[in-house]
Image 1 (tube, rainbow, N blue to C red):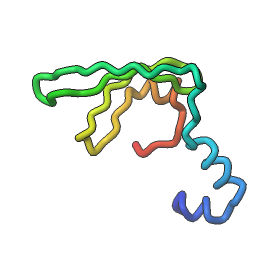
Image 2: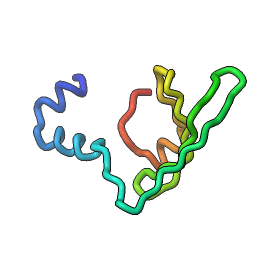
Image 3: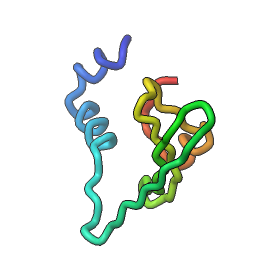
Image 4: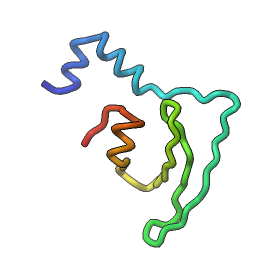
Length: 85
């Protein structure tokens, strides 16, 4: 049984998943501060301090990457969202 088949059979489960992964809006007084980081092999990357469910996370964004990589401990303890492993 695939995830798509399961979600197709349960409107309630589909709604719960959609709400869990829906982007949250930022409060009006939120500031976003980004810094650039030069690496020896990848060039210029973007470093941003973010919050996920109130927890601070420092992230590096590689706009040329085809994959999103996250530390397993951060994913399990802070992000706690469905993902492909």
